[in-house]
Image 1 (cartoon, rainbow, N blue to C red):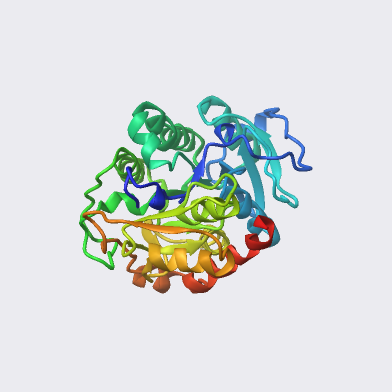
Image 2 (image 1 turned 90 degrees about the horizontal axis):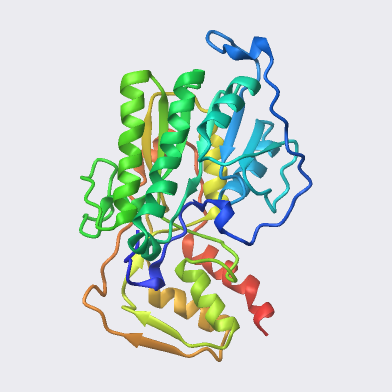
Length: 349
């Protein structure tokens, strides 16, 4: 979650729909043609030894890594996006299609016998969602509706959805458990909350199971294009630009993108009832700590402090539910952030 007016805490907790990213490179995957056969038109009652998982938004920040982890784990994986991933997809099949075309998605479900869906499409730029709520609705809400309805028609019974800590709002007690009231303060947070309500509606009315992941601040993006605070700080340091701390005591809960991808892979093959989990480390990391780490590797960078009314505030995850549901081992955030910054320090010289 982040302040829509504070770019230092712009979050990157799920994939922007890749046709908007402009930074994805072609990978050696071959688009799969859609040719319906008569036997594929009904999936009800069918069981196979190997399940088929479809990843929506597979070329984005998290999506490409999820496809890579799934294929490495031996999961039969299909990639669905308008652009190819820039990460190795292994044996994953790529279907070139747009989520705004639900009829095509229904055909894919029927033709390839999809059992489970991982929905990683979204628009996580808080400030831009405030400026363009229609775009936010299309990518953060309509993309999910366009997934759930084809799932209902094709009898696909499980979806994993990338939600956000933004559903809690700014005033929730911390660490915040999943049972906390949802009181979002931004258009983005409201739209993610609506997405969760859609999941609940389809679960109650049609039996579609869901796993909602309330992602906290996911880091590990390329700082050239990343919109999260760590990417912004690295990018400014690489360009010899000053860093401004709008409240050095502000804190968030940071989790590495590779750890998120590994978690999604574990949960994708896990049976169970519908569930919602916080995805974070439960550790506070302040703006000042991030700036200190950048300063450690970019010694000439200038750091300015700008007082703000909400200095010292933030949110971290209560991770008890996630730890009881899955064996997870996230890297310590300060160590992971330091390693991430160090990896780009020589490139800035």
